[in-house]
Length: 165
Image 1 (cartoon, rainbow, N blue to C red):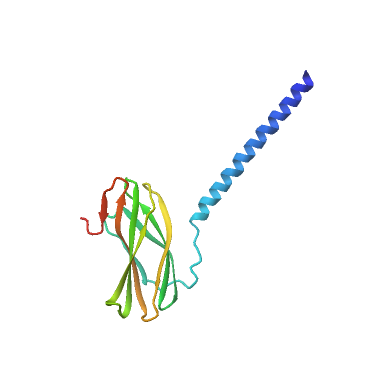
Image 2: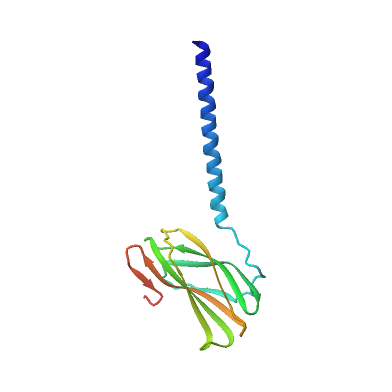
C-alpha cells in the first residue's frame, strides 16, 4: 500500500503543479492583453504642430476626452488617437464626440466643418476607451481640429448635451 500511496501523492503533486502553472500563464496573458489595448497605434505621419489639435472640455461633461497622439501627414489631413473616460457615477450607453475642423478658406458653407462621431459603446464609471478620428480635404489647408463631447446617453435613458447647464 505504501507504493500506491507514493504514486498517488506524486500524481496529486503533478496535477496541482500543472493547474497552478496554467492559471499563472493565463493571468500573465490577460495582463499583457490589457496593456496592449492602450498602446499607441501608428497614425502614419509626423506629430501635428502644437496647438493644431485641441480639446474643448465642457465643465459639466460626464465624459473626459484626452488626446494621446496626433499626426498631420500634410497640411490637408489629420488623424488623432484619443481616449475617453466616463467621469460620472452612472454607466454610459453611448456618446458623441464632435470634431470641429478649421480651414484657411471656405470649405462647404464656411471656414469650419463639423463631423460627429457617435460611439455606441457602454462605459462604466471610470472606464476608459481608446479611438481614432480624423479628417482630410484636398481643397483647403487645415488650420485646426478641436474635439469636444457633444452628447452622452446614460444607461437609464437620461441624456446630457453640450448645451446643458
